[in-house]
Each structure stands twice: as C-alpha cells, then as structure tokens.
Image (cartoon, rainbow, N blue to C red; front, top):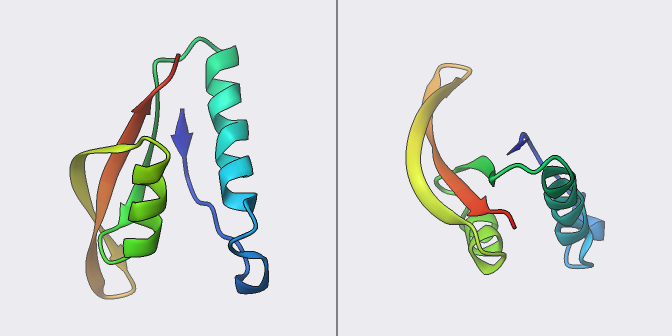
Length: 82
C-alpha cells in the first residue's frame, strides 16, 4: 500500500494525528494481507524522515520529480506489515 501524502496544519501538529492517519493506512494494508506500506518523502524534510523512521520505516531508494522547474528528490521508505 502506498501513502501519497500526509499533511497536518501547523496548529494541529504534534498531537498524534499523523500517527493515527498512518496507522489507519497500516490497518488497511493488513486487512488486505499486503506485505509492505511505502511512501516517498522529500529529501530535505528531515522532520518527516525522522517521524517515519521512528514508526519503523526504512529507506530503500530514491526517485526524482519536478516541482515547477525545480528537480527534487524523494527518499523512498517502506515498512513491513504483519
């Protein structure tokens, strides 16, 4: 299962909402007997990378994408389900 995006408005951050949303996705993957949950996170979003690592995600690659005229890199992270 892939997580496309999780955004929490600044005033609601650090209240456990991102963790709850992510857990819902994990539960959906488990219900479907999937092996992994994965996502891409911008390489300079150190807070998000730390958050995902804390929840058991591990880096497994990168991919480039273009935002406007700027080529950027996402770190691909995954977590084994089950």
